[in-house]
Length: 176
Image 1 (cartoon, rainbow, N blue to C red):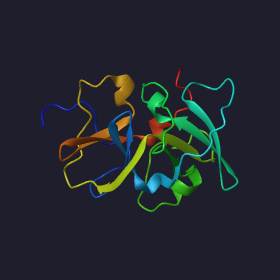
Image 2: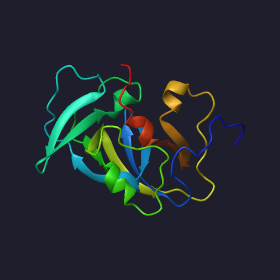
Image 3: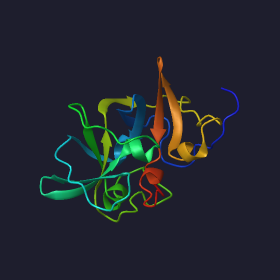
């Protein structure tokens, strides 16, 4: 394993946790399934003028307005093109997360208030379980501007799954 740069105490993902996996710009990412409310195929996203670059727009999901963030931009990449496999991962609100047994986040995961937030992704993957002792710290050579979004990494066969920190993803002021 070697020297590792960051502690794993920044979130609630631990051994045995289930992660919903997805791709963004060809990379495999995961979030604790307990914070995910639902996953929807991409519907029409309405752009909002004068918003930060990472804000893709708003969607209407069964009468509820949901803010959609372009996860590629949040993670430092270019805006994503919408495709047939694109989806919006809708995260639970702060109130919904507080009701989840065994999930204790140190930081309020929804700085946008108690409204749902969606993450635009390229392709949905599987649900995987974190095997005991397999979640590793983010390697030290990953730049802090990117590493702050990560809770750790998990090797899945030949693939590397980056576990995202929802608290960092949802920080309002991205300065972009």
